[in-house]
Amino acid sequence: MEAIVSILFLGLAYAMILYLISVGLSVTMGLMGFINLAHGVFAMAGGYITVTLMNRCGVSFGVALLVACVGVALLSIVLERCLYARLYGAGELEQVLFTIGLVFMAVAVVRKIWGPLPQPITVPPVLNGQINLGFRSFPTYRTFLIAVGLVLTLALWLGIERTNFGARLRAAVDNRRMAESLGINTGQLFTLSFALGSGLAALGGGLGADILAIDPGYAMEYLVYFLMVVAVGGLGSIRGPFVAALLLGIGDTACKYLVPQLGAFFIYLAMIALLLWRPAGLFGRS
Amino acid sequence: MAVDSPVAQLIRAHRLRPIELLPWVVAAAAYFLASGYLPLGSQIMIMILFALSLDLVLGYAGIVTLGQAAFFGVGAYAAGIYSVHVSGEPLSGLIVGAAAAAIVGVVSGAIILRTSGLTLLMLTLAITSLLEAAANDATAITGGNDGLQGVAINPVLGLFDFDLYGRTAYLYCLAVLFIAWLFVRRLVHSPFGQSLVGIRENAVRMHAIGTPVRHRLLTAYTISAALAGVAGALLTQTTQFVGLTVLSFERSGEIVIMLVLGGTGRIYGAFLGAAIYMIAQDQLAEADPVFWDFWIGLLLVLIVLFARGGILGLMDRLLSMVPRRR
Image (cartoon, rainbow over all chains, first blue to last red):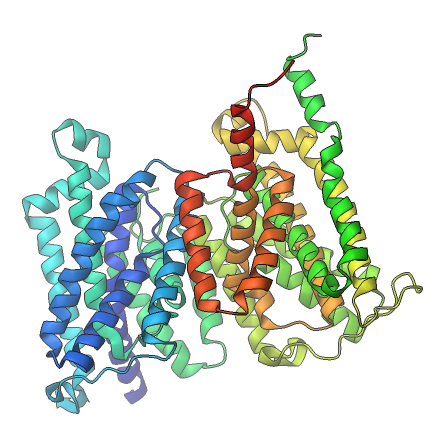
């Protein structure tokens, strides 16, 4: 019983980080059909900015996260307008190669500046230690992650379901041509959602720096996990990646805890089975 | 028959041009002139063979895969395990490597080729990772993280022993690559190869005119897997070691980069791309690996933005600018 609660709790915190990072990728792929393997770079950048601001400039955790989120979002607009936009009509292979090229360059730059070692993060003292939630106590930092993740998910869901921007975004994902015909500027819409997704990824990278260690291998190492969340969840969906992140986060934690030797093996097997059962993902439309 | 009828064009494409002998002249010359670089030469030829196998599925059939290392790795491990437990005879080892990879190819292909786009990409990635995790866990058979030890290879045909300088290994790789080249060249110019190009360009139309699309793709995928398996087996036999990296995502990515650098959908893209990449890596990567990654990344971005079709595609475009004399 104790073990199950621990697994669920740790898995949930992990899932929140995975979701925050991956949800933008899902929207990007759903809206433009763009296979962006460089999405992990935004999360990595967020992590590095957060850690560096805190460790070298003495900025507080919250401010550092905010700077990382906004900074990466702005940077991604430049990237999207200057580079990505040229490849929207291109084939899958071109998109894959182009974004892998970006990952290589980003990894090399990061390794040059920060070196190969993982960057340690010192969370504020408030988030250290344990917090008592009535029936038992939990690590404060992970409780905080879960709370922030849930709040952001709720905000995102409300934003997509209840606002005008969200309605236009959903329309464009469903049928881009029709949305264009109704006067929705899908190009601009895409730039905005791209920036939002990148900003969220940066936030996830910074928040989760203690779970997904910030090192130069980040963008490549966890790429498979982010892609899994998107592919299993279904493209262009907000709800799908959430369920997929929960499955992956809790499943991965459980596997590592219960069968440490075969953990990775089971995760890949489960994903293959899931994708064969539903090739378009859990909530995707084929 | 008019000179430019489609049939004449197809026949012309298949005819052996003198320049196609260039790689073999270079390879033969390198044997005599650059004897200190023979091990590198063997590595290059193995990578060329691997890139050729990828070209069949990615360049000709248009299946975007990031999991070609699965077959390379299975071939490498199969050949290694065969030499440790059964026999060190090299030619049968190649066949074992090819057969093992072909089995994995036909089974995984039958499952994953029903999908497309991101799902297909993820599945190729997942199958490679699955095999890598399995090879890591099955220490009793594969040696796990330490690699497979004790690979010993008998002389080729019972005559030519693998020497310390890599002479036999070089010629052995050269011979295998030459046979593979003849085979691939015949294959892509055959009606089967042409139908793959048709599927790449427009699968729906090929389906409509009666091509069994799924079946053709699966056949191509299996043949490609077998070739990649031969390449893996060659690596095992010439280095007498198998490590986990044969199944890594990096290896899949690297081979895609080599092929794209040379040019996809053309046989010699594999030759040129693999050779340039391996030589550049040998010269540059040792000095500064970080630098190397950066330039490879930049190169990929530039190829996609300005030079789709790789080096050979660029050369074609340059040549077409030169007015042709009659």
